[in-house]
Length: 303
Image: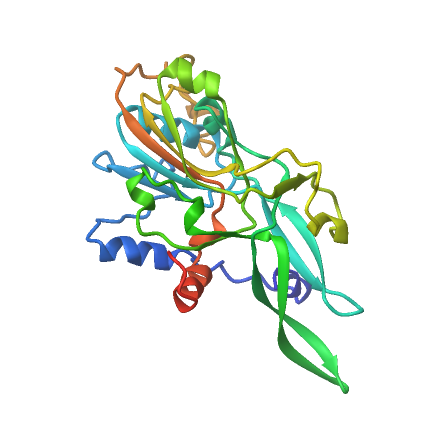
């Protein structure tokens, strides 16, 4: 759509908000929900207790500093991020050519200092879901909009037996569509040294494999289970509890990118007394989008 508008010499419309259903669900639970951009003019409110980051994009260092500061002061953080999205292009012989597209969140440097890494490889799971993908087909000289069922290994399905039994936020949750999500890697040495407890909230199935991302459509072999894969029930969502490591314990406060060089000042970072907090990280943001939340309700999936 963006290319079409640009070819016509027009500016594409502003992207629609895709997380309205999540916001409405929180409001329905009587939470006071406020949208912020984490900028100099739209900072994290001082009285906020929980910060929710759904699909962050291109975060700058000052934003990471503000997020870290919020957690260091005892704020709770929820992050939903993933490495890749996928494009489905109709094939000449039918079916679809599926290719990956990298997503730059900018939050990885902060998560790594807390002991979590979002894998940079494509995650495939034998336990997956069929999706209905729209496409345009030429039928008898007419171009028709149709939907075709597609089953692919990165359309990951999480079932109730993959959820932790001893974490309250997983109670009563059924099947979920972990669309195009990534696995999480834990730095157990860093977490142990910090005294932070890391609990997987839910995992993949026991049959998963990963691929290196490459340009162009994925080959058919990409969707076939890898018998040599040593991965099994890898973490997809993790809850950290304890004194989260301070990622900005030394140095100066990063300047906002919008601040002119002439107006920038050098200010040492704040020091904090250790305060316990919670950080919940899930390696998939698509599962919180409006289309999927409405779809999972229609298909009796958990939200």
